[in-house]
Image 1 (spheres, one colour):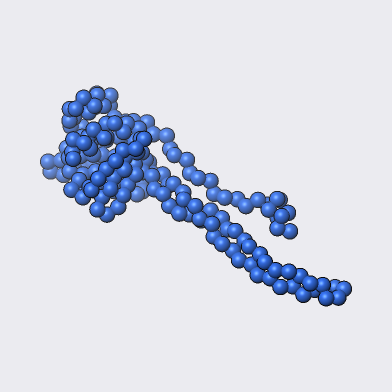
Image 2: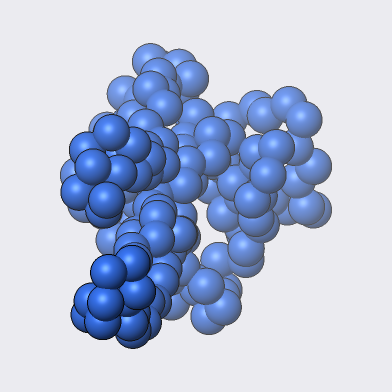
Length: 172
């Protein structure tokens, strides 16, 4: 029965979410200025800057979180059946169900702002605002900016990682 059940009704697993496609919103003049070593002061709307704070970088971004999620259940069965007389059987057995977990990446689109005092990720969910003084280290890998703060790590996908890396180098 288990073989036929698996053949006719295969176990449905949840598909891995796909990474959203992000296009840069940074003006070309700002990209050239950042890459040439200048520190542009970008005007940003819908963001309250602190006193003396200036924005040196902003762009569309995707925050990537890796979580363990339940993707299915696996059943195990052990036992046997003995025929005592015609129509009478002695059956014994045991079964167990194990939860199967897998690492799933969760994506949240938003905007990343890097100022001279803070790093801000603004989105409909999972937003954060961290002071640069709390930043322990950062790293760039492929198109990802990996930020390590005193309380928490963040992995952010950026379409123009070289500009963010240059701004971070200038701030450190």
